[in-house]
Length: 126
Ligand SMILES: [Zn+2]
Image 1: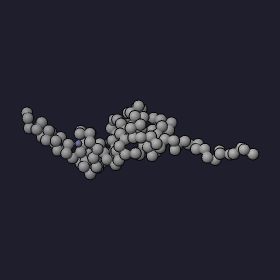
Image 2: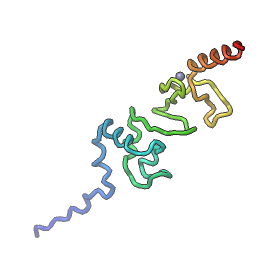
Image 3: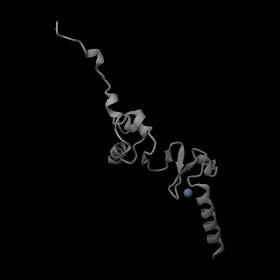
Image 4: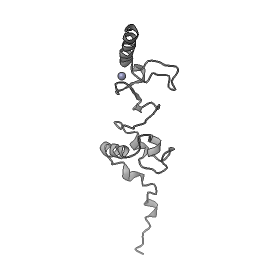
């Protein structure tokens, strides 16, 4: 009569055990994996990885840097990373560019001014 069934208490996904990880711990895990891994890959839903490494909650914590390479734009908390100064800024800080997939230039407006000046100087000097 001492047998107690606690099976219903089991957590088959084990998702709760991960929620206490700190931002630093999560970032270390991200840094250990390939640069082209997306949030989806870390959740095991992406093309590069099918094993769940981080939970959705963890991948969406603020302050994490996912190092996506190539032509893919870098987003963080709804902000886009400028390709020139490397700072994360609001989308409205980026000039429109219809030729890109997200309709925005990859560098911010401030850097765009610098870029245009550099370009103007380069065509003046002959
Ligand atoms: Zn910039």
